[in-house]
Image (cartoon, rainbow over all chains, first blue to last red; front, side):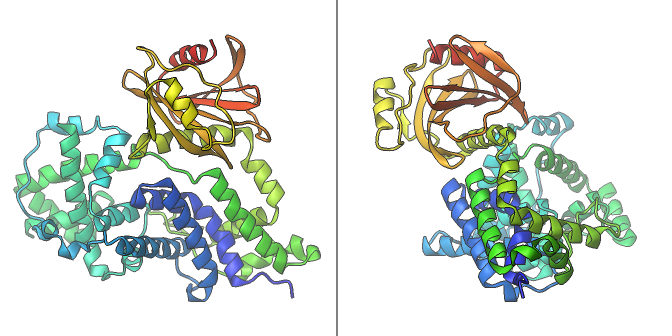
Length: 175
Length: 284
């Protein structure tokens, strides 16, 4: 008697991830009100679907997965979601010859400010941005695959392609 | 190893998570491929940029508090008063999930122990709503909120809802949108042009945002009802008729002052001296 439920305990623990969830939501949706809704709804789902959380797995990754799914549902409703497999540029080979950049040029890249990096991230596709952000959060490849519902074996190349795209966007701001 | 394989291993290599055999194969490829080794050098800079320059974002205080209260009321609803003291310990033993293993710091054993501790902390924090809010809503919170609101202005696609066609256009625009009349009569000048205004939130209340420029810097002015807010108690400075609190947070300079029941926060990466000049103009 008086034992807190699993749902409440999960939500209590989830409180320590509010900032990370909000930042993820904001960078996906680029809108404070939507980010707010996404985080609130993530908490609601966390409590109502607590039976689906597997003990011993990463709670933060589970929360990110809920939030990512909510965001993509929203995008689909707006008909704005295009999976990367449908986007031609995505299939470009990773080994496509890059431009060789000299040291002075690379040094210029170091002068980019937060706003440039944010803008470059925004210029990526939803999937590209997601994989870069999840990697930055420190999730493992398996966890990223769980969040993005893709095969773990594809995470490395997805990430490499997304980073290549990000690099090219950053060069646009650095030159 | 071909270029495509090499490129997918660059991040792992930089993080030292490649097995020795693949690391050696990658090394050999990079030694013989000028393009891939150049890409590796670029990738190192991109990693550094993402790690050090990406703007830290925090959830708005109103959202954080709303969630904490939801959790707290669920907890108190489920646990009797007498049992509260013992709850965190039991809460922690009931569930065992590991905290996210951080790539560098958490490689060793304390993972589980920390998960245990942070679980206990989360439950304790959620239990004492008043305590939580008292701590979160400290004067520091006010500064952090102002900083975060300014970041939202900086990275918003439409920071300005009403472009500046003179203060006589901007000020009336707020009536009906916020529940007070912003006491701003400075319409901007050559040194501090006003871009316009927008409605935002400051903590749990509506705010009138005015956006100014100083050369390349964006300056946000937030005007909001100050009632019930925990005002900072740090350094102050007399600027004309007002006593302003001066603070710096994560590279942003802040000036906060109260006047006739309204709180005002100026936030920018422009220098404090510039903010003082603008504050003086606003209070002329």
